[in-house]
Structure formats: structure tokens, C-alpha cells
Length: 137
Image 1: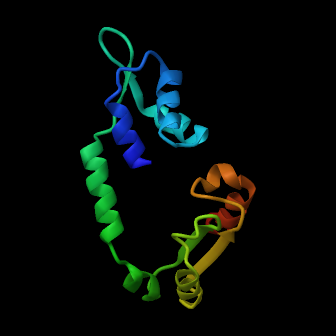
Image 2: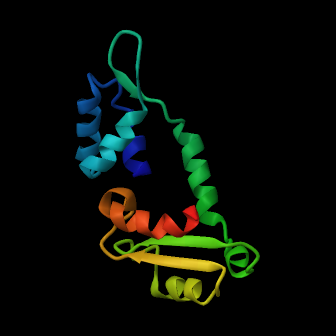
């Protein structure tokens, strides 16, 4: 997604939001993802729209996130945690990681939404709400 967005911003300004969405879709993104990204457009003087994201900062934050290893916090048992896993994102939720989470004990709760991808809120909203329900009590 980030690569597609970085590639797309060089085409700005866009005539309208639909043109920005089309540009993102042409770079391989799904329509719902492209539409979500287009919520961060702003109008520019002289007409058209551009993305507001500071992509070098977004890239740096993403790289930092990818490099963080917080298993000691998860396995430490000092805080209640819940993990909602997107079953279609097998590259993230490997069998080894799922098993490791399930072995963390009573402080860690896991829910696998089998038919959801990265966008669990659109792929399985009822399942997500049910998974979150215990945290509301």
C-alpha cells in the first residue's frame, strides 16, 4: 500500500477524488483501500487535490514498527491484551505466532476472524464487534 501511495503522489494534483482513487487502483490497490486513502486528500490552489500524508515520515514509522519486537511485553503477563487476527493475512499470523499467542496464558485473549483480511472492520464487522465486546465490560 505504501509503495502504491508513494508512486501515486507524483501524479498529483488530481482533478477530483475519483481520479485519485483510480490512480491508486491502477497501481494494484483494492477499491475500498483506495477510497480510504483518498480521505486524506486536500484541495490545492489552482484546482485539484493532493495527498496530505508526509510519506517519508509514514515510511520511517512503518520501518520502526516492523523492527520492533514486543514479545517480551506480550508474554510477560503484566497486562491484559487482546489480539484480533485477520485469518486471510497468513503472512502476518503464521501458525507459529498464533500458537505463541495462545500459550501466553490468561492475560492474552486471541480471536481469529477467518474470513477477514487486513481490513477486519470491513471484512467482518460483526466478528470484530463480538471480539471487542469483552473489553467494553
